[in-house]
Image 1 (cartoon, rainbow, N blue to C red):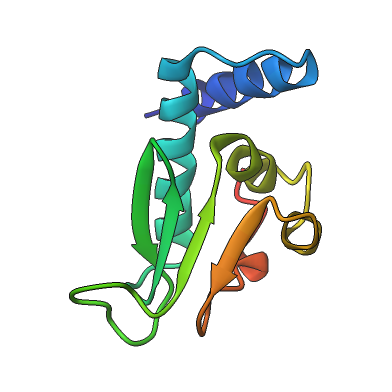
Image 2: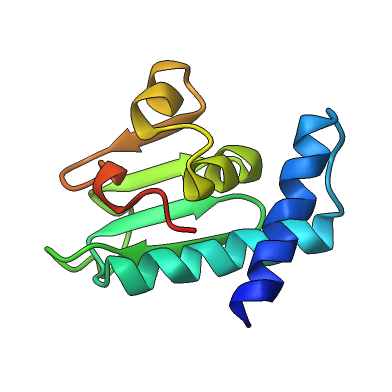
Length: 117
């Protein structure tokens, strides 16, 4: 996917959020998947599972490789929070403090990799 296509998807989602609307789920899913792909490029590895239900989950960040069962490090959030983190509209500390994401385990602090786009 091109950078301009990703930017257009992100802008469509952010515009909808700003107007208190739900974005088109197809566009929101594409934006989530594209930004998660950017995360895996920026922080390759398999020690942290990043979940953005219902759209996607990826493993990222160098360290102990997760193989089976519940990963030792998990980050979970909704699509809106993930997209806002990815573009820098909110920061990691604020998202955690306000309960917009959960992060547990070693290496689960992704603030060094954000924003992505």
